[in-house]
Each structure stands twice: as structure tokens, then as C-alpha cells.
Length: 168
Image (cartoon, rainbow, N blue to C red; front, side, top):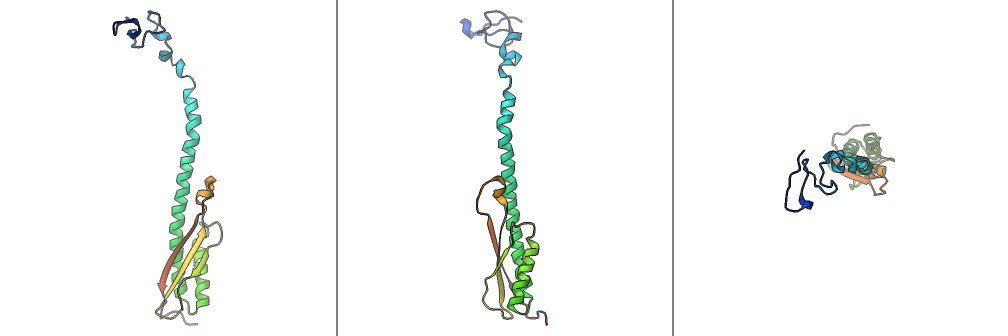
């Protein structure tokens, strides 16, 4: 390889491989230059992996945790709808709440960390009226990555009380 001057002074000159001459003492030693041999970056990729792997794993866990929150929200809303409908088909308020609790528990069995709470939010239980419930439960969510953030999710729904509901 031939030395090509890139400027007027020796500091700005490069050797044939395009690397600066500083440290080469005017000789063509591209093969021994640390940047050409890769010896200057030895172990750098290992350090990058050690630093970036935990960050990437935490990012994936946060995505999974937020996915569980979204899934929990839609499941609780669905359970509230099912509980309101199951309760609206009953003949009396006590049986309506029992049916609502049973429907919510069936829908949220594998979503909640404990039993779901079902609370009646409508007044009265007359034909043609509304049967409204609020369903809430505790979901795993961000607790799986060690963040103790309140993840109690609740949903409400109403269903008209069926005037032709079941006869005893």
C-alpha cells in the first residue's frame, strides 16, 4: 500500500488504508493499526449485551403487564354486561344478585386475583325498570414486574328487567 498525503502536515496524512498516520511512524502498518485489527473494540459487544439485555427484558415485561391490564378491562366490562343480563331475567332482587354474582365469577375466574365484587347500582326491581350492576376485581397487571400500582378495575352495565321473566 502506498502512503497518500491528505494535507500539508504529517499529522493530517493517512496511510494507504485510509487510517491516520499517528502511531504508524510514517510506515505502512495498516494491518497492525488497532482500528484495523479490531483489538481496540475487544469485549465491547459483550458489554452492550450485558447492558441492553435487562433493558429489553424489562420492556417486554412492561408490554405484557399492560396487555394484561387491557385484557382485564375488557373482561370486567364483559362480566358486568353478563351479570346485568343474568340478574334482569330473575323474578326477585335476591335471586337477581345471586345470578349476577355467579355470572361475574364465571367470566372472571382466571382474570382476577381474588373473587370479583358485584354491587347493585339501580334502585328497585320492577318490570320495565333497569337492573344495573358494578363489577370490580383486582388484576395482576403491573404487579408481575414488581410495581405496586393499584390495579383494581371496575365496569358497570345496565339491562332492562324482562317483563316476561321466568315464572317460578
